[in-house]
Amino acid sequence: TQLLEQSPQFLSIQEGENLTVYCNSSSVFSSLQWYRQEPGEGPVLLVTVVTGGEVKKLKRLTFQFGDARKDSSLHITAAQPGDTGLYLCAGASLKTSYDKVIFGPGTSLSVIP
Amino acid sequence: DTAVSQTPKYLVTQMGNDKSIKCEQNLGHDTMYWYKQDSKKFLKIMFSYNNKELIINETVPNRFSPKSPDKAHLNLHINSLELGDSAVYFCASSQAWASGRGEQYFGPGTRLTVT
Image 1 (tube, rainbow over the protein chains, first blue to last red):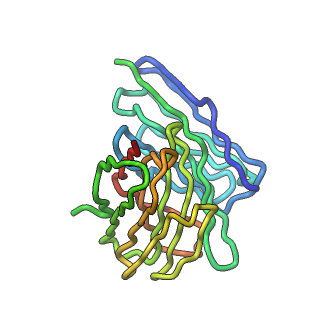
Image 2: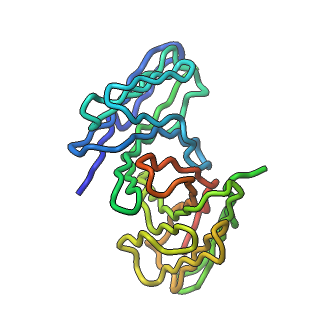
Image 3: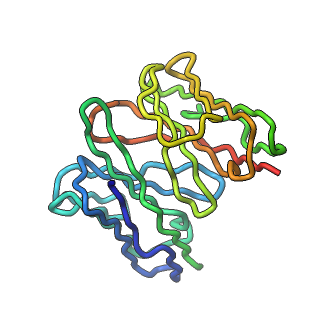
């Protein structure tokens, strides 16, 4: 059974601080996505990483896919209150005829002004 | 324009009732999903349809029946609602079915409360 773990589960930081969120698995994935979910809304796709070792930047957010394609990290520089939300990682595995996607349990981030 | 829309946004009903949630996407995607998010925010897939054909049916009670009249719509009907069905239900769609990417676009969710 494929499982994704995320750490930390909860994170509360002051505005301007840096933080890193981790997504780990014992399984290899074809790709990995990061989503952000705000209260009362659906998850919104932030990025997809596909190649082992790949690094993608989205403004103050830096995403990295592990070399073995089993884990990923999300680093936020100079966090702002607008970054508050639930961060979900999702791993996709290409099966014979469909993509199997599993979600991690999420990291709830609160950025205090 | 809303990419993935769901109705209703909130649904409060009593145990034993039957209810439906509707989902529509205007992204031109072939694949649609239903997810359940519990009180701990864990997102779990329930069903997936590709071009109106059921592809994924996770361990979901038979009381839940999805229907896809066309590839832009995926509805969820729930019979004999139970207290444990209370959750937020999300509809999602994705462009490519077997691409190894699995990027999904979610609707705003339907918060179901069973009393």
